[in-house]
Length: 336
Image 1 (tube, rainbow, N blue to C red):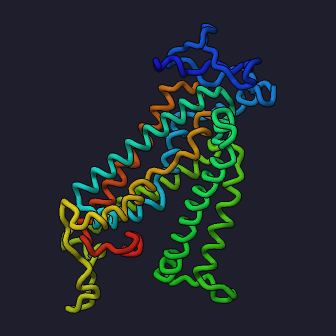
Image 2 (cartoon, one colour; image 1 turned 135 degrees about the horizontal axis):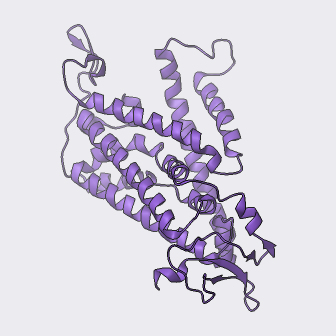
Image 3 (tube, rainbow, N blue to C red; image 1 turned 60 degrees about the horizontal axis):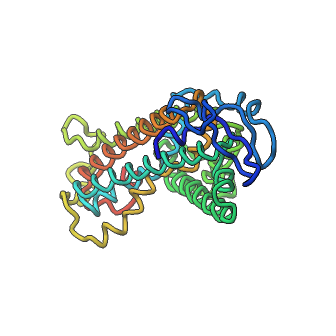
């Protein structure tokens, strides 16, 4: 199929099938890659004009789309990558990270094509699945729900694990007079902060939050690099600190290598590489909100987002593995 054949100009009802049919700019079902995916038309299932709804939705810039998708990608998965490299080695870990990134790019592109072919705006996993495989719509929706539930839970776990220790380092006790443990308090606080953000109407409304989150990611990258640099002038970033002549953690550095020593252990951490690039649940929203959403513009958003995440992951993975070697048995954030 030529690329132009699945670039949607509009969606119109098919009287024989009762589902959206693609109609290109010239009316013959063909359109080039510069044809916007978001145009006029109707949603056959509801018979409602989508032009008015989309006119207020498709206002997202390339910057907003990239930071929101990149923020969806870069998250808790980054914390487990040093351990994944410890189990697979530099070479195998780098290859698995590249393959996972490539798989995510291909998957996101195909989802964007599916959205374009369905011709439904605004779109979601539910609407596209309902147009493609109505009998499996509920199953697909449940799978997306479980995936998002798992990702959301992982963030609360990270908050609960790290925030009590972080506050203790700053000599701050926020739960002194509360009938809660520090972990329970910060999990509840994280939930309270996230819920309102999850209720915003558009993904574009999160561009400032996403930008702030990515700045914190950059801070973590610099932090990890400083620990990896073994120089006497950076005593505060010694991964194996000592008090006087006695090291606090004498065995914190392990061995590092290029190849995996145990293929079974490498397979056990393979899911960490895949999880690191999860963002597919938001691609339909990005497609619906992006201004002048041609397939080429969406592919650029995907490429920049995945590429940026891959660079961040490689730096954190290599620096973390270089610092602690095969002693990385837990989340990287716990070690630091």
